[in-house]
Length: 251
Image (tube, rainbow, N blue to C red; front, side):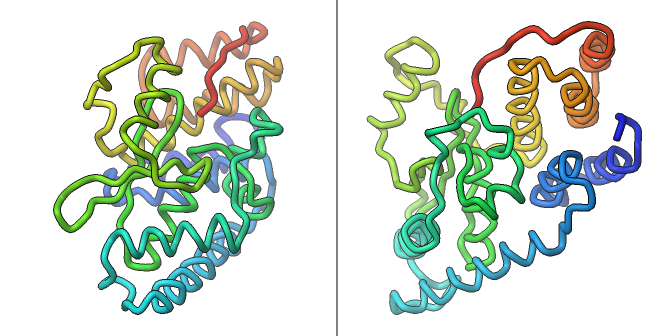
């Protein structure tokens, strides 16, 4: 469908909500619906619900009630379920496959990139009584939990493991070219709007690399909704008139 059609209207309506009320899963699935006409969004949400119920049972097997388990116990149980039992993993073989950015495809194929795997992890954890947050770390989206002491525990959703400060410093250096220290401003939790913007920017990069003008226009129309500005509108107009220039950095 061209930008301005029914799917864009629904996306715009959703993004008008305050960030705390913004349903990030539904927003991500509306992005996927642009590629998968007639996508059954309710069925995708039901898949997350089923995984959430499995996560609750996994926590119970650890000897704790969901919502009452120590953060480290609940997090370990959920990571074990998703990455060991269910087989979710980062798509290292075909990182730039657009399907890695569509939440329905990630749920079906169980492969993705950091940000879409983070959406699965955060959504399943929430259903199992554990609050996780996304972190827009440069070059590699992360997830964090907050322990009972207030300390942050960081997870690499691409590999499904808890990572150390040293691990993050290595990613920081690879992404920024600087050895550190890490600028702590990049470790704050990402808003729902920021998550959707980053997801769209990943697709933008892919379609620019592929020279796919029509799909790029669809993505840019949604980016103009997420972050409205004259520059966003100008980017959309340029894409309609000229072939896209290559970009890099998908995360």
